[in-house]
View 1 (spheres, one colour):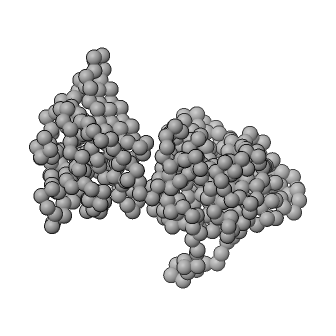
View 2 (tube, rainbow, N blue to C red):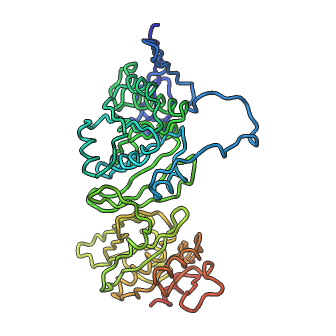
View 3 (cartoon, rainbow, N blue to C red):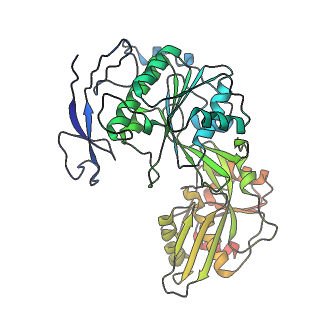
Length: 458
């Protein structure tokens, strides 16, 4: 059969399709982000050849029409990975027939985490690990260095899609790892590996295979300099779960966060520590992030954030210093920098504290990043303590969202955060008035405004 090619143009930022090339995407407004994409490729070379159609979905085999109430979801099993933190982020474990995209910066530990996971899964399931960037010897050396029992794992070094699908149809594995999707290519597409056409088409074929055969599919993805998964945006629409492994390459701790999950919450956070023997899960993150020095310094404060279904206590540090150059800096590590600018304006307007001529630095200890607004009050009190040179009590915890009018707004699961703090030995708390327990003692102070919080603490 002759090969038929239909050309479309796809935006790599939002996935919008166009019939011809144009400089700006009218859907997302991006410039120079539209690339050529070939669809409708049909190629029959042998009995294992595949047929691709851009209009076909990714949900696997078609089924008969059923009533929603008659579908038995209890028949869908969950496969535990052996890591409680990993299962937490996945929503309770792996779902057969799901496609999971794991991204992260180079050196974050994506391949290490997946290799450790599939080694545990291989005790009960058949596993095929396909590596396109490393040799089989390199993967074996990593497994030996980590002390993994990997005798039952099948390895394959391959980058051509047609050959991969042929091996999959022969072995019928329960779990497949593709490391990475950016190096996989199809002979039916003329563009280079990693291009929009190759990534989109190869991911679609692999996802369709996984759903048709109830195979758990892991796709490792590179990230761009902006921190997003490399390739077309439509790649994230094809898969069921998108995970991001975050953390500095020279740091010890890694955070696994879900950006999309069709089988669970997207707010869960898993914490891992990079050790000599690989990734080790941290089951009690609060105890790890609260390893504080004996001497208390001005500007150091503990706050409580809420990630998924649990509270996490974090140490927040602020440093306010004179700026001799007339251009004060605002640097936030682990905290939203734009929100810091807004909080400084609130501190000036409603707290009467002026730091416009000072350098302000904010840091979340441990390398963790959070966008939670419940840290607002802790950030302002830590900045004030550093500016005034006052040491705060070590048994104090602070949380609360601050509005533009200076009001302290209640946050989600406030009483659970207080209980977590009491469990770790904290005796005093400054919290929003709406989160104060009715039967609490005088050491738990509920405040309604920023001015009131400053008066209580200073």
